[in-house]
Image (cartoon, rainbow, N blue to C red; front, side, top):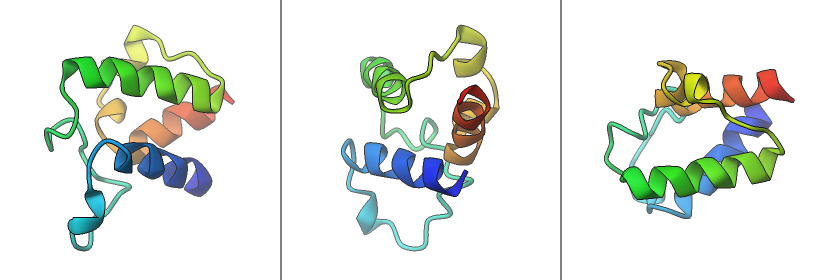
Length: 81
């Protein structure tokens, strides 16, 4: 999961400059609540995730509580590999 989480952070950093946020707990980081990604950006982010990890995220996945944090998203991804 650690490797998956790191890859997610790298994808997210491409969308926002997270390096300026001091001491972020990326595992618990609620990227949707942080306003980093708008609805259009979210669709692009989902497509990037699916391509990067060669998986398909379902509506149940993307509407789950797990999907709201990077750590939870990493768990979803790892469960599909």
